[in-house]
Length: 521
Image (cartoon, rainbow, N blue to C red; front, side, top):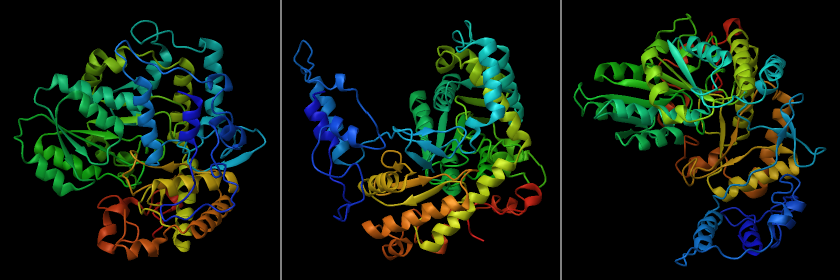
């Protein structure tokens, strides 16, 4: 792509949808038109985004028929810039021994990270690092191939046994990521079940949507967490029709929680299997960190809800702090996926070092609740502080703290100013991750986010809200509310609590008697 065009597309005016221009904030993305290399050189957070050697002008790429390949691609990119959904990747280098601090492209420029999915900081835990060092010295860096060729080791087998035991399942299968696990599982199952119908929550992750789409099976989309709508759709099909209900435990962008017991009951009533994505819950919920399905039985250590779920997928790359994904289920289903799923068969297996680190992390979090307790404590504290200031947090009962802004340009501006002026990193979230007009900042407190750090964050957000005229909770209420912010009591029910979930709040963390993270009492 020609350097001039890249520079034009990268350059933009920083303003909110209301027309308010950025004041003198030091924001590296404000100012006059400059080329991408000039912007990168000045930017304290992005560093050298593109090597100068790659920025020389190039001739348009056309095929034999004269098709304007460059023009098509540039038009698509230009559209991203025009609708403000273009994604900027910040240069953030998290410090293992000083987390949640990180440095930007300049090592002496330290920032506080408030949006990592390394929820419990396990990527830098000594137990994990020691296990990985030992595996590296013993087995080397790579896996050696796919599992059926040269990439199947004792560590892979031990990891799968740990995961199966964690979820009370007969077996588990590890993939390179949970995106691949979800896609491969959902797409491959349809081949074994002619006439299969998927029932998918409206807010399911892109990996699940992709898996259902790739399966080419019939699908029914039910409104998010709407049990009545799900039952209405299920009732359209005879018991003999194969059915799978696909949903999540914690929805990552809203923080809402799936109705696991009720969905399992509907599945039993209408002859369906259940597919539960616990990606944003494993390690953080339940007595041993098995996720929300285990969490429901926390009070009496009753795992009956966990046992009612047929398939559970999770990640090793969030609370466990490593990388990779998996599915846990009965032995025959896992053997079917091992034998038929292209996403497993034709992918190089995760390295032994990764498997060793994951095993260590899972074992540690099975016995330690300290990290989970601190995460919930800090989340609850932050939600209460933000509520007191009227900052619009989308209400939910989980560890996710979504701060509603309502337009892509404003969300990007808030993120830029937090980073460049306050040395706080919170990524903006826009379409297609969330719907247009529901853009937000997504904050995820962890064990290291002390009340002192929370005070700094809250003060910064208040200053930004006042400077740029972003809506407070009362402002959202005046326009009827959005995403539960500024909504009436009846509208809030599904955002904050539901039957079965709140019942296990009182004794959530053993003797700690800590209520859940909703910040509601």
